[in-house]
Length: 452
Ligand SMILES: Cc1ncc(COP(=O)(O)O)c(C=O)c1O
Image (cartoon, rainbow, N blue to C red; front, top):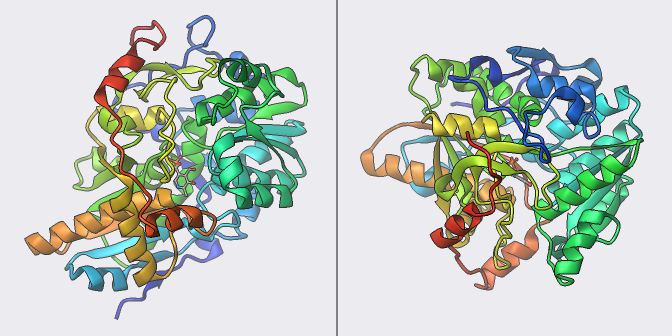
């Protein structure tokens, strides 16, 4: 009988990240300066990021070595197991085989430390003393707090105010690893003060918190900014997930039919799928399915345009599927994944037809999360539950069509600090919300005036 979990030894851990930029079907449209609207050069990014990461952002090299210092920290929890969800399969009475890559076993509980550790390392190497960042529900902030602590850097986190108030445990986690956490919008930055002047009761958004964190970094010589998703170098670091998955599937002689991941900014999904891209490009039949909430349907309803990465228009302008940088997610939404845009690399491959996307309302997502928790045991993060919903639906289709497909999804994180959302679901307080098409059209008016 097949093992339930497939492990790699530490020695079998990949030693290089995979850079999909080397294999793109067409070049990535360049990021633009938010002030001049001209293509960004490395020097333009230097006040925000260290050169090591800027080089990776622009690199066309297919394989990039993972520094030994980063590998030695990865070994605190990597390689992560690939698990067969046998009890879920039985509950669904599906002939499909379902596997999941468990990224919830990291210290912060998600895939986010894969890039946090790498980013902290490159900053430290170039003499940066302090990192600023934003966080929504706290997953990314806690990953960076963990990573900065490991490399002896200070960490300033701007946390979306509504989450800061509703989710104190992630804040405590960040503080345990030594980070300072400020509810955003705050009066600590020009960007925060500007938003507060317009709306003193603003609940905050990721776009606003990014503006504050960038603002903080450009004002201080000792500080750089760190972003947990979207950027090319973040996706590069996350390919460790897909590379390990590939090696694990190979070990048991299994070929995947569909790879599934939830999409917030796109980093866990892209990091999981992209290492399988070279074969797909050559015609191998393997589907990449991204899953997002109907409350923030970036790929399924957004437009492929140049837009600002943040609300205050301080971050670079990139070409991506976007709901508009003025997007503020509905307050009733408990399911995570609220960023208005998506990673340019993912958007390009979606636009070229290599990636499919589907959107779900939050109640069906939490139903899938409950089913997973009650069959496989682990309580998933609400973000991860989007991927589970799609995996369950694919497995049901296999049951109906009597197909023995192999479904593999990325279990991006556990939900131990998201129990308030589960509580809302269990007490039937979650409302489904469909982001209206008119709002997408309205947001078009605020996009920067660039062709492309
Ligand atoms: C557990 C988990 N999964 C997924 C995401 C979505 O981010 P990304 O699309 O960059 O993987 C987040 C973001 O906070 C997260 O915490």
